[in-house]
Amino acid sequence: MADAKPVFTPIPTSPPLLKSGTALPDPFEYRTIVGSLQYLLITRPDLAFAVNKLSQYMHTPTTDHWSFVKRLLCYLCGTINDGLQIHHRSPLNSHAYSDADWAGDKNDFSSTSTYVIYLGRNPISWSSKKQKTIARSSTEAEYRSVANVAAELNWLCYLLIDLDVELLCCPVLYCDNVGATQLCSNPLFHSKIKHVAIDYHFIRDQVQNGVLRVAHVSSADQLADALTKPLHHIRFLDLKSKIGLLSRAPS
Image 1 (tube, rainbow, N blue to C red):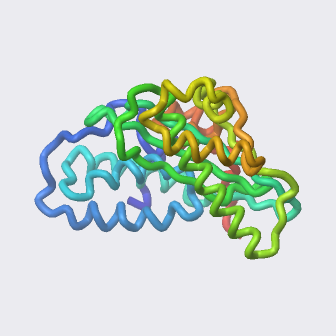
Image 2: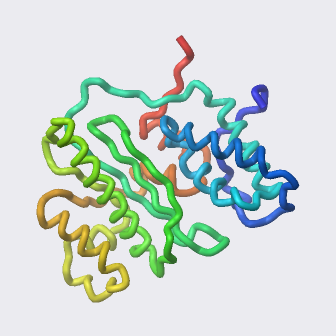
């Protein structure tokens, strides 16, 4: 598909990717391509959501899933020179964007947790994963995502300490859900979220000890949105540029 017609986004906004279609007689090629795309995620956060969704059908892929794979290859044909811009002069601070698509999976109504972590101006870690439990509210889904990012930030801070790199201030975690942001510092909400008590106490401990600061960010400035769900190409290209992905002609 090297000469395929390029498309603007890795996955369309409609129709949704569902458990539909006729099972492929030989799923080997599907599994090979999607498995290979996992390695491309090391430098291409814009593929995180699409590869995450396609990986959920590795066991029994269908003709519908195969068409989504071919569309993703069309996107790669038009963005083959895209890559992360790394700034060598960047302040030693860390911040992250956390987001969740509540009940976005129409097969089982599970949510998707995503994040993008920066060291200075450079994105160094990102993820798009299906939540293991069903969230009963958007605040719960967002809060579970915040807890996952907090754990990842904690690990990265310890890694930087081992490398003798000292951050100038505690990491800041941006979330666009007001309820989830308030839960990180307001004990009055405790009775409403007993079913997520472990995540609650973990983040509260981080915030109270000054290890982490959770701040609200508007949905328009939520960079992790590009890893959370299919987007219209204008919104997707805007977030892709803000994350730090640029197209460079080979030198």
